[in-house]
Image 1 (tube, rainbow, N blue to C red):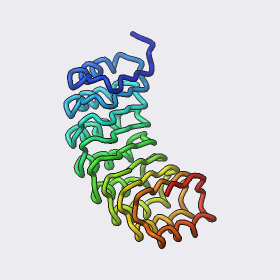
Image 2 (image 1 turned 30 degrees about the vertical axis):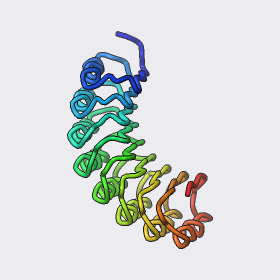
Image 3 (image 1 turned 120 degrees about the vertical axis):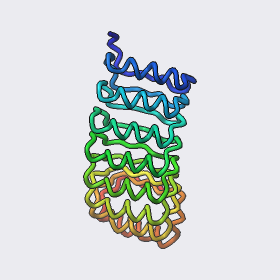
Amino acid sequence: SSPLTQLNLGSNSIGVAGGKAIAAALPSSHLTHLDLDSNSIGDEGSKAIAAALPSSQLTHLDLYRNSIGDAGGKAIAAALPSSHLTQLNLGSNSIGVAGSKAIAAALPSSQVTHLHLDYNSIGVAGGKAIAAALPSSHLTHLHLNRIAMGVEGGKAIAAALRSSHLTHLHLDYNSIGVAGGKAIAAALPSSHLTHLHLQGNAMGVEGGKAIAAALPSSHLTHLDL
């Protein structure tokens, strides 16, 4: 077998058939890093990848922008506990509430430390599910930009920060508002966050003041508002 450990096939129009072919080769390969972003492998391709995960050596998987829906998201979620994945990028897909809830449920029994679910329509319910999984997960990096989590989702994430391992949190463009901003601010001093991204959240003056007041007693080194 090939000694290749890292493979990047991003933006190559490999489609479903290509995704299935890569999946079939995984168990007998030495690949630890696989990047298939922007390839339209869809649910069927992602299901094939998911089925191969437990018998593969993959630790890093990038499936950004691949037209993956809830079915593919659920398949990947089901494979997480028996896989070696530590970094998973599912950004810019069509994963909804059901898929995000499945992923959230799998996190505590997985090895995943870095998770990207940006630009998926997981909404308030999905945001809350991810939040509920944080204390018992190994996540240190969480990217949830533009998932429409709203104020309630922002509050749920904030409530989980104190008992999570998160050091990096990206919540850009989620309409968390003043209340969400204040909730995150209140959680900062007792969190492990070093990097926080909150662009485009309509937090207003009061939310900004709350964040500012929390900074001296926080661990933040990077802040993007």
